[in-house]
Image (cartoon, rainbow, N blue to C red):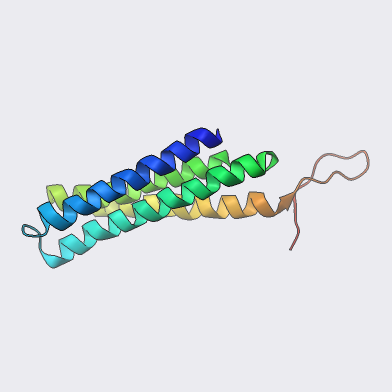
Length: 137
């Protein structure tokens, strides 16, 4: 699983570089400053989360018992929805894509929150009882 998450991070980061160059060179002359800024926001979040997935792949390998893969899927899906909706808004002019963007943001927040929770949770069992989840601070 960590290999797939790592590859997902590499793909997001690589495409982030390509899309950033596309925005800086091909779109700069044809977009208004606010639209160019929106495109750059999509690229920035894509790059951050690509790098974040690389770190999460390491964490999945380091702590396999923490079941971090669902957090990685939330980050990947959230990035596609968040950044993708911004790209589509800018490139198509369809303003309704802006209404989709917050769903991607919620998935990103949920992914990071889940990663934190699963890394802090312990799976201790009271004597003879079921496994419990307790956060140790």
